[in-house]
Image 1 (tube, rainbow, N blue to C red):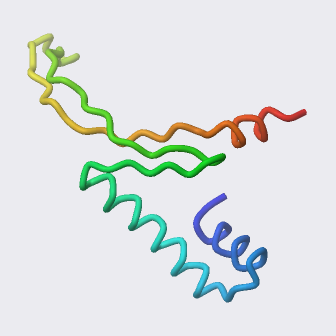
Image 2: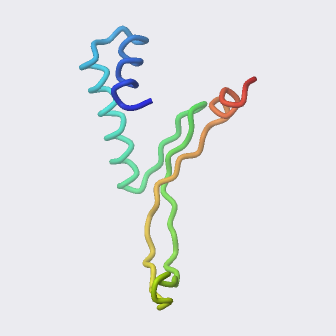
Length: 92
């Protein structure tokens, strides 16, 4: 499902116009990005958790030359599915 299909699905299920559904999705995504960039996390019971992981600086190798390179530390966004989502996906 792409963004346009998601907008159509939400508009139909919530009885909204596609424009309002698109605004809601954009607001949702923007809120998640802003919260994560500020160092926070988002927990939606049954759906999942968005959080930031901190990766340490490491040494790597350039696959072409074999030269050692320094990979800097960085923050990485992570999503963990909630219990209800996991159960729904695995239902037979």
